[in-house]
Amino acid sequence: MSSPFGLLAELTYRCPLACAYCSNPQNMADYAAELSTEEWRRVLTEARDLGVLQCHLSGGEPLLRRDVVEIVAAASGLGLYTNLVTSAVGFNRPMAERLRAAGLDHVQVSIQADAPTLSDRIAGIPSFHRKVDAMSLVKELGWPLTVNVVLHRQNIDRIADVLELAETVGADRVELANTQYYGWAWRNRDALLPSRAQLEAAERVVRAARDRLNLIYVLPDYYSRYPKPCNGGWAARQLTVTPNGDVLPCPAAQSLPLPRASVREDSLARIWADSPVMTAFRGTDWMPDPCRSCERREQDFGGCRCQAFQLTGDAARTDPVCHLSPDHHLVADAVTAADRLTDLTLVPRPHR
Amino acid sequence: MDRPRLARSARLTFDRTRQRPVLLLPETVVVLNATGQAILERCDGRHTVAEIEAELRARYRTVPDGEVRRFLSGLVARRVVEAGDE
Image (cartoon, rainbow over all chains, first blue to last red; front, side, top):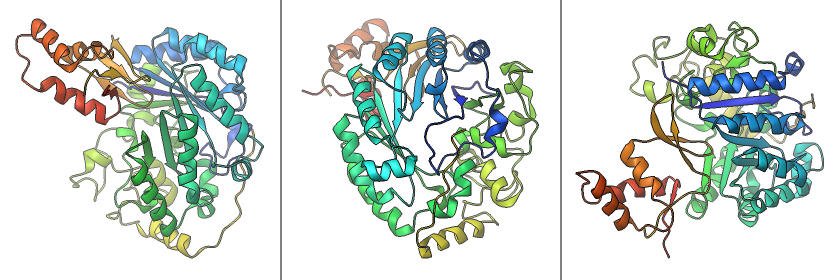
């Protein structure tokens, strides 16, 4: 068993935005009993002892936690590389200066499109101008800036303009992430899934921009031949702690029928080593065919367990995204439908 | 590549859990050996590649020709190191 490198600390699922592509769980009320500052301090200390080197403070909107500066200071004090993943709502100058003083290393700001009308419509509140201001502030205070855009049917045609905006604000990295269909996004999948023509046009723009930008392009796995590689293997490199203290290999894993493991009941080290939620799909022994005999098994790790469960009802099956999966028609049908569809209405996620 | 420097987002540190030098970035961790650490400690925008190589030769007996440049080129491609060309 290896030590994890990264901790995704989901401080809260509360959010001022209402993006329909959100991958937070649909049952957000189950996570309302949020960890205290003291509990987060303990989690961070235990994570560092376990080998964690990076801490991604995310949510929801992590700035809604009143103690976010204290949590950053705790993580930074332990020597963790701290990354704030924010919508930028609440990222004003006084807050930014306090975070800088607390030792925050990196800021990732999400934006929903390249222009206010569409960005604000997708976000559900007027936020575009605040986001652009926040990006400038990140640069002004000397942080490296990542601009993140989640791509879907309603904004993927704007990709060239989004990249232009990112260049204008001086982004050090641009992350173009095709929507992952978990949580709230799963509910909106058919309305979010782009057509093949949209995707091909977007990928031409991405290829042309690679030379001049530090660009991370998260593949749309529904259109891929092989599945995405489950964070480098189930419970191998990353772990997630949810707002109420549940420990998971990744946020989507909350949907699987596995026993809960909570930092309120056990140490992070014991959970990482022994809890069923971590051991269930670690390594390759659990694999069925076609994965078991596939030469890519140590490369794809069977794909995403959460997607396999969502689409087939069995988390131990090959990710249906893979063209070799016996369930591949489940993905192929959705893709075919996306080519025929006219635009459907998105269901915004609730704020809390 | 002239005077390489670490990317602004990168932090070079030592991981006591793994007992290895590591380079931390927004979404990446690069686990290094002692030589890698020695090279990256000198990527400050002032040392040239030739100077880094010379300093390494003073410290380690064998530094194959072109090895430092190859190592750094790989990291430049991953945008971990800036080439520092004029």
